Image (cartoon, rainbow, N blue to C red; front, side, top):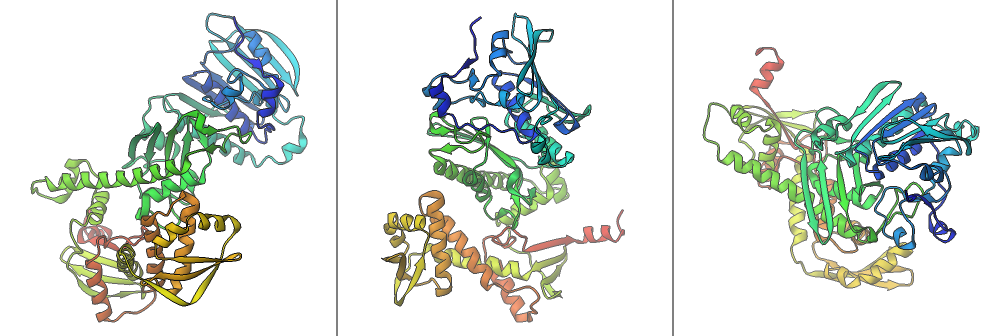
Length: 561
């Protein structure tokens, strides 16, 4: 049998970003799971003892290794994934460095048993980087890796290991990533014989969302697939109502590999637009498949940082695709409701459509199927909330959010109009970082089209002309947004620019909380709110209005059981 694993020659070895350091149990587990997936495993079982420090056992049903390959695998830069410089530039596997196994073996007691198809099994054991045992072994087809007493011979590194629960959390998160990335592989994670994660390889993302993100997380999921210019994007995203306080619940997978990429993660968030509340982030996964020649994963030993030649194109594609999906979802709901014949109750109609009542209400509002209902003003609560009533129930309007919505739509419209420019008697001076200065030099023509004339003076720029509608107080924010857009997307995205600036201006001048309003002021606010396209949410995604039906109120007071 020809050896699959070879030791790379020195020239290729020197081209690899070296320095594989196992700093915690999760690093070791990640490498072993990657090897199992590269071996075409469809079932991977993981057993942990002592939060991974005492033992990590990974058993897979992949194609296994021969005796010769197994012995070679413990040498540095011994790999079956690449052989030439060309292979290094076209990596289509998860592992390729040939560093993980020797790195782990040097700080643990490591045993690998493996059996390829139609062959006998074999075992190789290392302790602290030194060969301890090699012999025949009985096992099913596949590979079993056992890592015992991690860092037993490196007490200095053991000091930096976090609390046992923290390490277990990191181990679980590693498995979560692979569960989401490979839905057709069955995973089982156990700690001290207690099952922590179990997926069945069915490809059911609703089931996987419930497992990884928690109960109820699969409700109203958004799924889509996009193919443009040899770029394939598959996304499974949570509803805007299901959010988290941190953005690390957005998983980006590039050619099957989990990566960290701020631009792509931010594109997902921007795709939700104003549907998210402030400082809240969506959950979900985005899988990107591109030609490996356009990706450099040989950047960092952990392989989470990659260089992607067309990441701005991909970011734009992700952002626009997500926004398109929300429009499709809304249209489907609107069309469904439009075809409903009059029945005994609205609730029954929603149930017949198998839709969520609250979600349908929200989408009806957003789509502007009906304007604000008619109601009577009855007072102000805590100087912040305006109270209204009608025959249906009680309405609460957040006066600041309402004023924000009104001002946002006003300025968004103004920013979209072509406006004459005005010259400045006293030019405004701007200082930029060196990298930003170069960006402006390369895009002066595009900036000029926006009504801004910038003239370079040594290490600063002076603004001599600006749009007539732009207030002096907002010009710095406007230019800041332009430079940020150029940095992120290499172009000025007028729609996002209008959106960001409109939000800022709207928030600055909106009616504040804890401000008493006269009846005339309340009537004017409600009147202009009725004219907006989306009177139910502020530009940042917070609700403008809450409704409590008489039925809900009577249930709260136990008048209805």
